[in-house]
Length: 368
Ligand SMILES: *Cc1c(COP(=O)(O)O)cnc(C)c1O
Image (cartoon, rainbow, N blue to C red; front, side, top):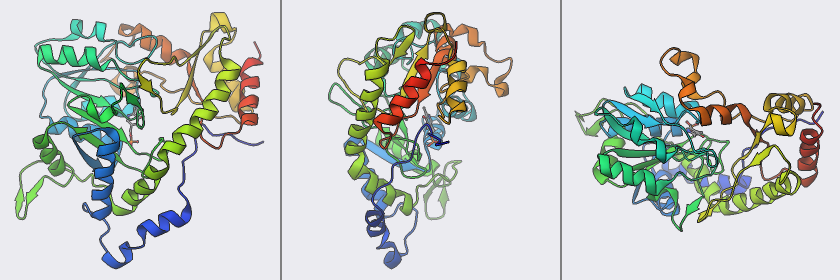
């Protein structure tokens, strides 16, 4: 049985990567913000429309160390409809997550529900762009300004997206990205933070390098989250191909849409006005009472035939056993419902029209 995974890492041409790393055999400079790191940082800041950017070891530490570098205390309004990383970063940074429900269409934080959650202890908002959908950045920015709150976006899903002509690095005090192998752009493992304030950047740079601020001088309780030169080199190669990667994924998404659009009980991603998509995920919401079978049955039927779809995001982070008794997932009913209905179908640029056909037939013929 041919197994179809939910995603496949994009690989640059082998020779191109070899060429990119060749000079390291002369310089022997392998990490600690070398030349590849600098080049990638500059190119990514421009691509993402960020005034400043720094690279880190992964997306998770970009979130965790950015929250620490903002020097926050108290409560953070965030969303439970996300990957584990967002909530874990907040808690590990010593902050208390307060979960806001999501919009039923974009599945990003519902700005209409933020203000009711603000208390005297609230210090920041941590929204998550989801599946390439953009948060309502205008409404969130306006609330943050009014209440004097910081905004840090988990922007792991919007690499390559443009909203009203600007990249995702232009929004929020900080926007954190993941360059993990499974993302639309990757450095094997890797991540980065885009930010507006240069002083924040100096603090973040210390936080990722043991708190070191100069020779014989350590001023912060930092860790180690540096991106090495081999990973930065992978990023330089992949960045040259990322527009093609996005276009090819768009082709695969179009196959899915041809077969699944308009089927009663299937909720597909809606186009967002002003948004250039990155085709990074293809989530389908299964309305069991209308479609006849639920998400879990479809997942099982696909898995039984070697198709590895993913219940992403499920469960809500507020329902994790490590937080048992601390949060009530019932407080975010829209997110809860979406987490029970959603299934991300396989999507990568080599996926053929025939394979998409097969996957869609399995879904449409799923035993009731
Ligand atoms: C991938 C991802 C992360 C974590 O990034 P890593 O680079 O794997 O640490 C965080 N948040 C979201 C929404 C993600 O998709």
